[in-house]
Length: 289
Image 1: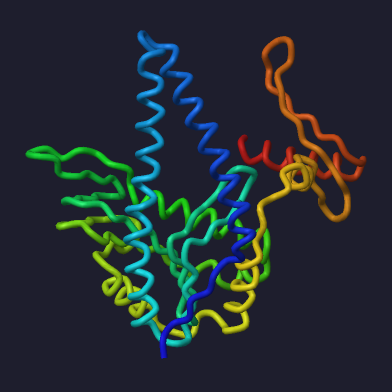
Image 2: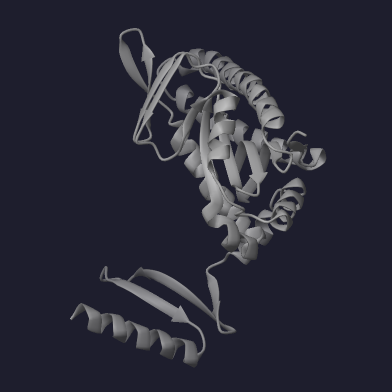
């Protein structure tokens, strides 16, 4: 038997892609506005527009090709207990998206896979990456740092949406970077395994032993990510405002500077909450003496 493929809801994914496209358009416009302010900007702007769009399309086509072949390797060589979710899109904070190439769920752990379809030779040292161009090594975007961000935001998304489950599984989430088309890759002292091709990724996944995650928790994650919707920004901001609660008592913390330039902290709440803060402030002051 083969590992199962699970897909995110198509209508929901279309909403994500629309929001991501709008974000990319805003970023492109900022890029073009900057160029238009330069000397001969009026001449360079249309060229830059075409170049920017072509680069984005090229990146997506290359990425899709590599992700498909890796996906099939995971499907064919992982055990039937494993679940593979391909091209998972989540909005963790307003306009803060993550696109995970492959999320593998299995009883031995959760694996966040970043696939790169880059050609050439690559050298990574302590998460800093370079590509060989002629006789020189040129710095490139770090795929390990990129995937480190994916894991951080995925954990944050779990904590927000499945807080109890997050506590149980947060130590069993493992990142892996996969180079699909590179001719030579060497990684030294990087924060995660770096492999070439889907088969090596399967090998890394199989290295993790033990029954670390229950089937019940796997099913909870599947349902949550399948039906994850884009955020309602106003509702999210209201929920995550600076107002806090402690023991049912609501308080608000603000900081600023006086007219003399001195820093201050203002706590707005009940007398009991304010008294608690004063006690804690006194304790910390004593520690500094």
